[in-house]
Length: 580
Ligand code: PEP
Ligand code: MG
Image (cartoon, rainbow, N blue to C red):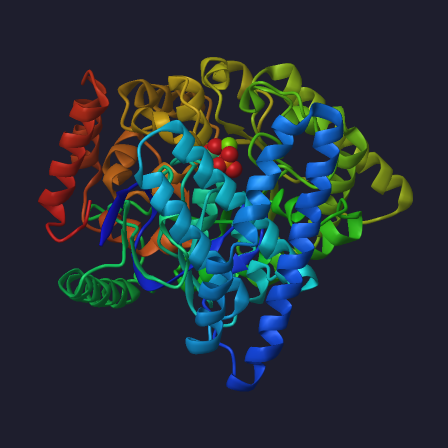
């Protein structure tokens, strides 16, 4: 049994069989062969070994010519390992006697060899382990060939272990089969983490290296509440976690009963709870959890899921689907927020040293006006189907907002000329997710119809902490009084000018923050659908004066740790059984 501590990004507990998702994008599952296939599979193994050996020999010759025999010796060593009789015998035994597939046998055997080297001290030993991983990759590439299995082709329930998953890879996971995932890298605010919550599967990121320790097929527990991963658990641990899975189920069933109850505080204040979505299909979950609409539709996922840019009609079809599924409830569509960790499949700057400070989001949209206009035209066209508002992301100065609005006006004029109908009085708002936007709110209120606070970015830009970096994850927190003070400034400023303001960052889906956010004056929260019942439960258990008192207290504290202590205590006072 081995325990790994990572960062908890999506709650719940998952127990199941591990599948490794390699850097090269294929998975090596434990698969068994039918008895009659053994000989053919052994032939396939020999062909793969021969092809890999030929490749290594070619490399050896090339390097010998260009750099000399000393460098070529590395490849001679690889060749020796690959064609080692003992390895071949071991693989044959796994295939013949245990009926493992050649892919799984290769991965398992070579990873075991690598582990032996890694357990010995010294750089040379680590290099040998790397040589073995290299051979593994090469052999797998030949074995899998055209039959590479992507995550899309899973057919049984598994837990994914990966070095990293991009937001689009994560969005492609099928929650019917993928019951949880762990990544070695990644931070608490990354979009990979956000998508995991949207998929409602337990996830832990930022564990640091461990993939060399596993070969796939072993039992794993993912504890998404505490950021723990347990490899090959003993019986006692398994039993304890199975019990937790049951408890989660019971809590979910209890929360289910809240669905049709109104989100009203004990003193009668209605709190509007909206859902955050990335795909049209998620509207269903919003409705199932009792959302009163969609407060953030991250439309950029439309770009992330395809090889070419979506056409105006592709956009339009998706937007209409969302509006129709909502059946009259409102939706706030955010224009494309690409860049940083959301990289589409078309050329983007590849030399950015600080992508989160670079050509991201609205900046990218304003640089590629045609692309931006295409999206805006589609949103406008969809606006005849139901209540839709448009929101611009990452606005950091007033001119930027004006330019974005100008592109929108141009798109309106074009539609007008073409005789295409759209709603003329569409509301246009902006995200408040950069400190400069908070500071300049008194000017923004003149330009924007509404505001939505994006704490995922506001935290990183206020505290100078990369939201997707595991090494600074402990600094990335909405509990920091600096973040809370900025949130208060934004709410007060909007309020003074009579502009609606809500929040759509992950922070408002965490029950620990509900009291302080209501106390600061928020009355609309847009959250991951799975968290709606929990947040509703907190809303229904508090009064506004009680929340105001909590907000006033934490605003004067000096550290995130002190704030967290108070918020946890207060939550436990009103809901003693609430996990925090
Ligand atoms: C945010 O920054 O809080 C937000 C909602 O936007 P995203 O997470 O997509 O950057
Ligand atoms: Mg953001």
